Amino acid sequence: EIHVAGRRIKVLAVRDPGQPPWKSLKVDYVIESTGLFTDAEKAKAHMAAGARKVIISAPAKGEDLTIVMGVNDDKYDPRSHNVVSNASCTTNCLAPVAKVLVDTFGIVKGQMTTIHSYTNDQKILDLPHSDLRRARAATLSMIPTSTGAAKAIYLAIPSLKGKLDGVAIRVPTPNVSLVDLTVQLEKPASADDINTALRKAAAGPMRGVLEVTDEQLVSVDFRGNSHSSIVDASLTKVVDGNLAKVFSWYDNEWGFSCRVKDLLHFMARKDA
Picture 1: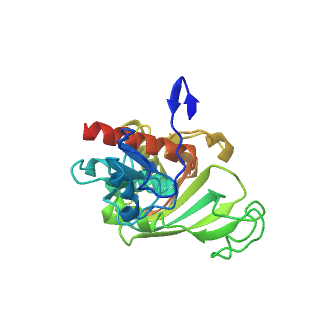
Picture 2: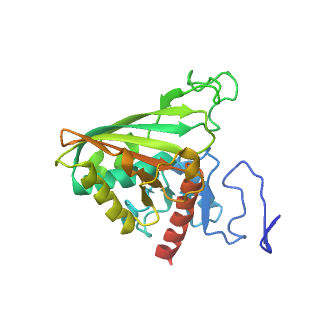
Picture 3: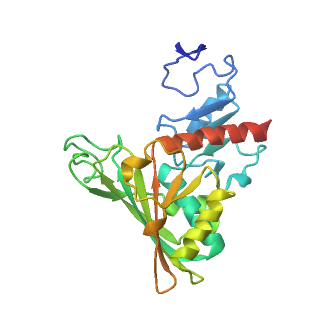
């Protein structure tokens, strides 16, 4: 057991998601964060063990719904959505910005780069890895690699299917990342127009998910920020009226964890 704030919490150690005694423990929701059971069919083993629903804290395969809070949580149906993905930290940063741009100006197409802190999928020293670049020492280089965040954006914003792609540059910092989104807009807009639309969303329907800052900050300043996406307004640029670039920071650890918590509370309220 572990003791937290006077509460006793049972600790289990099993390899099979179908073995934990969720039913006898009266567990309603399981947050599947091992990274091993992102396939919904495998994650459903938690339900066979007695849990009502499963939240996968990663991009998933075969899930009932992928939810990005503040973007498409209105699509949740308690009757049919039992295995839900919270997408990735990068998708959670990208999607709120993309939704505001889609709803306000329209997006023809675009590219995204995430300048991303290293993760435990990389190596401390040069060692074997299926991705030859990720095989290199994480703290010594900027490492180009793949990300599915841009392509997967359509799971939250269907109109963007096939319109976005992107890459990741892993950098030698332990936390906080930055999305660099460049899009061709359907309607002309200035940098001020874009920032105004983002501020309106941050103060309204995306409060707590999206934030806009005018301060001259660097990555370490965003550690512990619970928002999914923090737009750096001074970096917003527009060329020729419709080629727009928006930068948005995110604490890829804490911010994403806060959204998993929010998704859990949201589902519990809807399921009640």
